[in-house]
Amino acid sequence: MTGAAGGLGQAMRTRLQANCDILRLSDLNPLDPAQAVEEVVQADLSDMAAVQHMVAGCQAIVHFGGISVEQPWAPIVQANIIGVYNLYEAARVHGVKRVVFASSNHVMGFYRQNEVVDAKSPPRPDGLYGLSKAFGEDISRLYFDRYGIETACVRIGSSYPEPRDRRMLATWLSFDDLHRLITACLTTPVLGHSIIYGTSDNSVSWYDNHLAKHIGFRPQDSSDVFREAVYARTDEPDLTDPAVQFQGGGFVKIGPL
Image 1 (tube, rainbow, N blue to C red):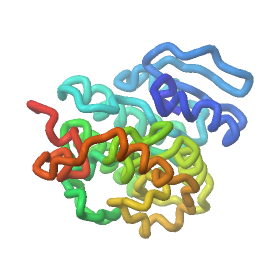
Image 2: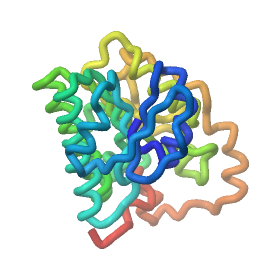
Image 3: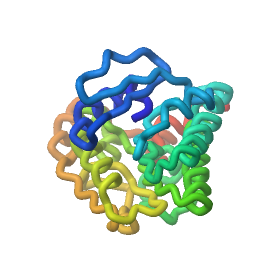
Image 4: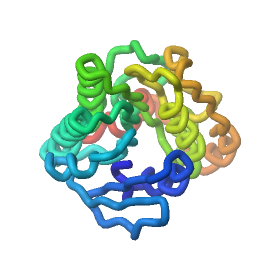
C-alpha cells in the first residue's frame, strides 16, 4: 500500500493486514515501525529506482500515494503523473497483475449536483488534481490493454469518520466500506479495467455503479444516520454558489490554475 502515512493509508493500515500474509507499506514521509505482518519502505514516487524496489515481490498494489488535494501543477506532475507512470512500469517489470488505484470524485467534479454519472460518463475534472487522476485512469487502461494488469479505478468520494457537510451526504464513504471495496477489488475473480464510485449506501447519490456489479462491492454503511446532525450545524445552501451547483464542491473554485 502506497501513501501509508496519509489519512486513508492510516485508516486502512490495520484493516488491510487481514487481506495478506505481508503488508508492505510505503510513503515519502516516515512511517511508524513495521508490525509483525508488515514491511516498511520509504520511497518517492517520482524516483523510478525507489519505486522499482518498493514494488518488487508484491502480488497486488493498493495505490493511495501522491497528492490528494488541489495544488500547483509542478508537485502534482511529480507525484501524480510521473509517480503513477513509475508505479505501473514497476508493476509491469515485476509481474504485478492487480492494482487498486485511488482515483477521485474530482475526475467528474464539473457535473452538476442534479446529474447522475456512471463509468461511461466522460470525465470533467474540476482542477489540476482531478486532471491528474484522470491521467492515472488512462495510464491504468493502457497497462491493462497492453500488459494485462487489471485495475480498479476507485473514484473515492469523501472518506472520513462521518460526513462534514451537506455535500458529503452524497459523497461519504465510511472507512469500513472503503475496506470492503478494496477487498472486493482484490478478490473478485475477474476485475479487468473497471471504474467504480467509492461511496457508502447513501440515499442521496450522484453516482451509478451498475457497470461495476462484477466487483461485488456492497456498502453496509450510510450517511443517512448523520443527516439531521449535518443539517443542524450547517447553513442553507446558496444555490448560486458554484460549490453548491457542481459535484466537485469547493474544488471548482480553487485557483488560479
